[in-house]
Image 1: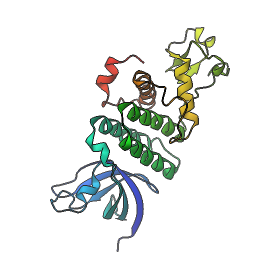
Image 2: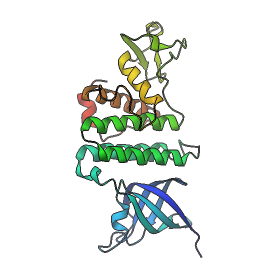
Image 3: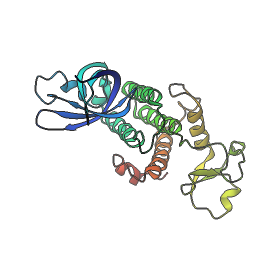
Image 4: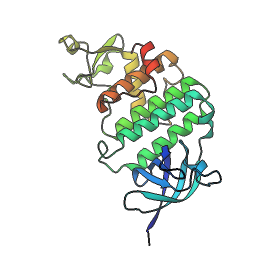
Length: 262
């Protein structure tokens, strides 16, 4: 007899296994990134069909299998329904799903901090669903980028120069240099050493630093001050950093990247 187990999980994507069954890729609170078979999910009257859509959190009962587990029961915890009625919310939520699918695999994430990552995904989708503007959607996605990288041990140091260890926060005006080859910030003095990179205004860096230090659902003093252009630049900066880590470029925002200078 097959063993069963319970877990909470958020659907990231699904794809057909055959004419009747689907495979669901999800992030589980206790198992991390996993795939499971939803038998009969493609049939018109299937109870599982609606519960295996993207961006749904379920309480699941699964049966252990040799290669893939099978979903026996699914009870929705949160459908984040307002995501599906807005193209921007769908796009940024898909981006989050892609980040989790890439960086929470065994190739990248060796720590079993599944519960923390699950709660971050859940909270991000909840905030994006409730967002009243595109600015809010980008802000919540930006916070997710920063917090996920922190949880995985790849968080950026926004405060100190990578070379001299000087506290760059002392420089309130002007710009500092970010080197994609070093994956680090450099103070104005060290940036003179013929190191290639991009200039980041210190106010932008201070904003990112504040987001990094505060809790995901904690409002910072910058949240209401950052306009659309600032948020978009910050998002694309973090996206490029993350893409460089994985050597894999996300295609969802290709048009956006071609029209913006970070």
